[in-house]
Length: 579
Image 1 (cartoon, rainbow, N blue to C red):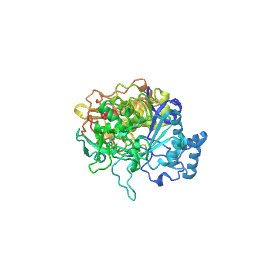
Image 2 (cartoon, helix red, strand yellow; image 1 turned 90 degrees about the vertical axis):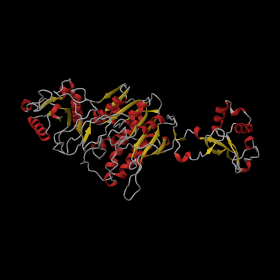
Image 3 (cartoon, rainbow, N blue to C red; image 1 turned 120 degrees about the vertical axis):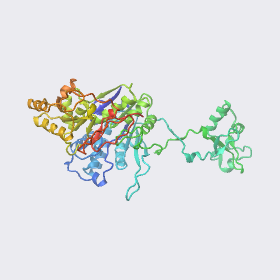
Image 4 (tube, rainbow, N blue to C red; image 1 turned 90 degrees about the horizontal axis):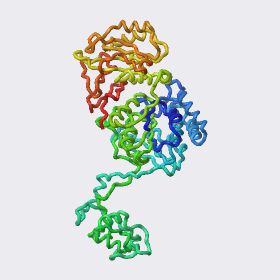
């Protein structure tokens, strides 16, 4: 069964994924690639926020979580502990070390859930790839290293006082020698095709001439003179390529290997597969362009472009990778029906590629926004796909647990649960009392806006309602919804009632301010709302917002590209996911 988990991948890997149950792992762990080395290696006293991997933030700091991950690895002993301990002694306690400690703990768990025939691809930035390779050598054994794949992700990237960085690194490991391997072919580039510059007089096909001999002399038939051509004199011997055996059988229906060795050369000549240079050079054979399947895939990939601003598959997710990149990896290192795992699945490109190629999949992400985005992507592109979502609060206890672990993810989840279409993503600085927005059509009065405020604490009071009333007035919004984890007090309910009704409403009497609890939402009791727009329809602005830092996003037409304002995340239900 396909599964999508909302939560910390370390916990999910330890508690929810069975050992040796996964065939292929791809991970693109968040990393602050834009940070300078001075920042990454600065000693950290732990005063900064804990290591975190948010949907649009990939910074790491040494703190309690990083220290706990380091301690977990030390307790595991073995080569990984030795490698990590040596790095800490050299690097110190800083952002880079926090990242490596968190990764080491997860790589150990990923190794355990991988089948003996499985493989792992770690997608990383050159700033950290060499450190991660040391960890991977320790986790999987240096003998199981397969490739460092270079993916040229951009055509130009100017950089002062150094060569422009244009590539990412994919570190590819098998768990054992039995790791699945399906060779992939890469199409010839235009420059290579120019080698097929000769035209066959019989068929009119383009071909290139290739050596019919191999290095070294032989005393048997392959070393004998044929039609005046003496391979021994050139220090070589006759060596028809396997291509010729296949081509001959395709033309004649006979097997070339049924003939005596030198007779094989006669047969190749009779069928027009040999080339005799006009200048009297040594005989060669013809390789036709129409038969050329391409070249075996190498470890430098330049034929897959990064997602640009006009790409159809673009979802506005900053670390989104092209689906063709994941399809290549999945096709190479797994078979139909195998299980593919992405523990940092972000916008779900791995899941999309796995679904297209007939694989089962497991996705894990720590942000609720990513989970909603993936869910919408699956529904849009693969509506018949069966899958389960784990980790979303299903009762009051699990909602309280989420609020305790991460108040921001709790706010996103609660706002989404009541119908928010956009969320405040910024963690730093004041959110100005807005945790989410609902937009709706308000008939002759234009476009309506409902502001959502979420309170995840156990102590609530009337000032929270007064604050939301102030935000509604400041933002010139029609309505507001206050979502509480705790039960509201009577003064709070009176204050909400005193806010009255929407002054201009095309949908009858609508309360201007409503209070709802998480428990009520989980039990199916929703606030009174106007009809919400169908995803894919567009609202046209009737006025400019007074606060330029707040919502300016509108619901797009199907296929329309949108660029979110800083700090705002668009709900994927209202983004076209075609292609």
